Image 1: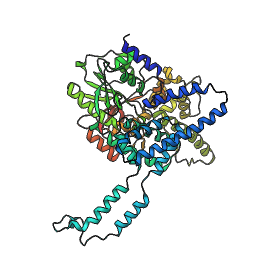
Image 2 (image 1 turned 135 degrees about the vertical axis):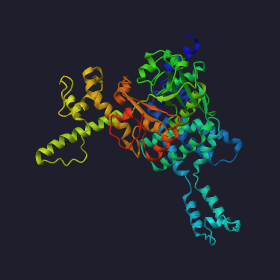
Image 3 (image 1 turned 180 degrees about the vertical axis):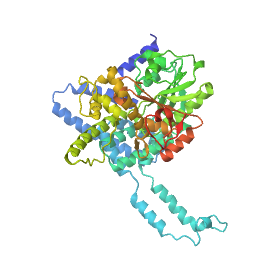
Image 4 (image 1 turned 90 degrees about the vertical axis):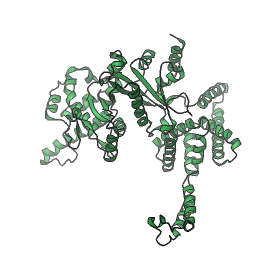
Length: 542
């Protein structure tokens, strides 16, 4: 094993398996070391009560110090000392506990918001102005218009635009131009999202919305660099690929080397302000045909000569920054990768994905549980008065599916109804059903049909309920095929009963499909998947 392999192996083993627990900045690493030294000192004291009191006092002093540095970073006008103040704030912020970070963010959201009294006064002034006679759009574009008549309007509009900017924008803008500041802002937003998950505070939600909009602007495609990641890249970068791979974890160095070797590509989006760390990366397999299982992509088949490949298969897209959630960097990444691969390998004619369906089992188990209870209530109601009166009941199983499930031996499972049998089978934490040929045969028809329904019909606010489906559909893909037992890992069985889906990017239809989905929620699907469900409003693509 060469030095590089050893370095990656050792660093990866020392890193936590959960990417969310990774050190977020050198500042945090320094703080961890400081805390470790502090802990060694603390052990020399015998009076733990006094130690806890002193620690509490020190934490409060530290919090107030960071609060003051935040105020200075916002209000200071002396550029010669601003960098030092921003450094103090960043280092101080990363030294705070989770609770103190949350407290500081709430202060930032509430005390450094916009001045609504000033906004209201300006609006009242604006509404009090009288437009000159005939001052509609046509009159304003006429040659006789005099600019002087509108000088007051221009002045108040300018003041209003300024007043509608919250004060905390100054902090965001200054950090963005400060070395290491963009990374700090992504961590800060991750903390905001974490706090919002605990409690939905309106002012904090507004802070998040504003920062998200700013980050989306600063991370436009023009500012991002596309890099082909190879085995020759620094060990520190490859270590991050191993740590942040979120879809199909990299098991060892051989696995990593295979994913970066012949017949494979890994592309990452980088920003100059966060060097050596991809914001998002995508893994690609060059194949003869669109793969139907992840096993054949990762393990079973040796790579084919790249000159024989006809398909570029995207099998993993991983975001590395929790603070960039909701900012669709993947959309631009996929389109740039397609363009680059097509340029370098014109013989590649198909661009597809082999994607997980992360929300399917959660949706299905909830559906089975509710329908099981409603079915029992329906039978009880019918036996008493002959009418069910159950508005939300539906028979989600076909008659032959129901019969097959009910014919299963009691050695496998018990249940009075097909939905109850299916619920008991799929609800098993050890996935025993996946080890039985008889159970697999009984479950395949309803699971494939219900999975197609989930992908094509289940919506949230007019868009696909499944997050991965929504991502690819809004990028201009179509749903091509669902694949039985495509991911037999623990994660795959838990998320989607082992089913995976192929989305296809038809180069001449990407923009059309994206617009139809964005505008009307229209999901383009192939006849192969449409055969599982009756969908009158979808077009068929042969």
